[in-house]
Amino acid sequence: MLNPLQKIVVKGKEVELLLTPSLYRVCKERGWVIESSTDLADIEQAYIRLLYAAAINANNIRRFDDSSIPELDITLMDMQIWSFSNPSEFVEMIKKAIELLSGKSVEQLAKEEEKKEEKKKRGSLLSAITRLLRRS
Image (cartoon, rainbow, N blue to C red):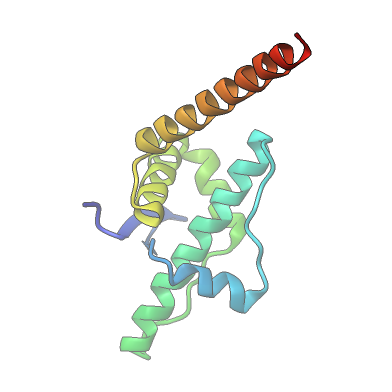
């Protein structure tokens, strides 16, 4: 099992990311909606926002335990620059986020999606055959 507390370096400083469902509370409190279309750029932006929320989540929980800890001093822009400057690390962090938040690896989710697609295709083929047989 992966550790939900991950670390990255942004602007030369170590930043913690807490990839637990509580990060969605950060989004809700701030009125953020993290969603995307099937467009790759939209998906990338959604994950940058998700990781930024994870950084805020970690900072909030650290500050809850120790009020002397300062507020997070990075911005969404800083996260955007980090993702662009560290593409392989960004992809690995996305994989970890997916696994930690869904409980399944990217590979498992891809296999499940393939199975769904196969069922759809079979269903479509079956319904097409059934329609042809009804006509006969």
